[in-house]
Image (tube, rainbow, N blue to C red; front, side, top):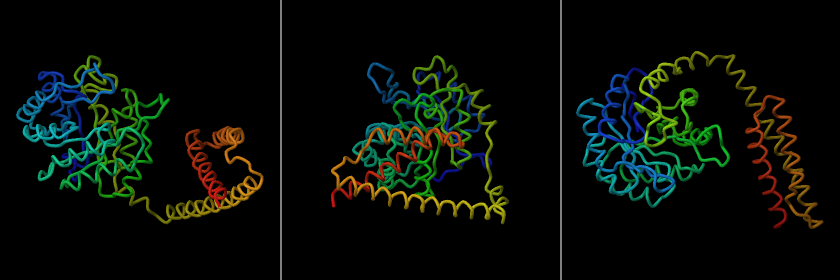
Length: 352
């Protein structure tokens, strides 16, 4: 998006209620946040809900409330858009920035409709990751907005739906936004810790992780009376708690990184590079054995997948890995990737 935090070297800060509920509520929160040096005041006007008969936003009237926020506080405003009409109404009411929500990012038709409505207008646009962990969809949505002529684009990491997940509302899966940043180094990434967490008690932890990973900003939901919020009450915090959260964050500087770039650090990195090469060599040797087993299975007409054997390997490896300080999640992810590559090798042999 190529905007900077307006105050010192602090990251971009976006804050405000999940939903605009009443004019009084929107203005009260804005006045509370004015003194906290936020860069964008957020409020959902249209709320795409998972199920019907839940609060789906106040609609267009809320845009007038955001206009009053600008007039009374000077804060820049942002809201979510999901179609052409939303875009047109936001532009009419001089909303300063737009964001595309996770449920819209998954639909290229909807994103293209928004992109078409934005042609000829260079307004900052933020694109949330799709609900499911699909980096291609995320990149595709960003590209559609860019091709519409929008030059100020940012990505919002709000986590990914994961069946059975209990700790987070939406699992961070940090490796996905990290890969997005690797492919697009100049793209700013903002962490929506509210939607990742879904609860107040871990908001700061996730925000700090984002700062440690050099994210460009934070988007946090703030409400004067969170428990009475009309949507997502559990993940919103009061302006006072928000101030405490922001004041308690540690911001890592580039200068500190330069100081640590010493001969000693280079030596450690060289050792890591050597171990990485050894890992690749071990995987190569493992796949040679996998191929040998594949040829045996083909010769004796044996099925590729052996569920009992795979389950036994996974359980034993997780147990051994945890004893060595490796998380269950890491071992699970690693071995599943190795197992899938092994299946791919044997399927190729079967088809020869």
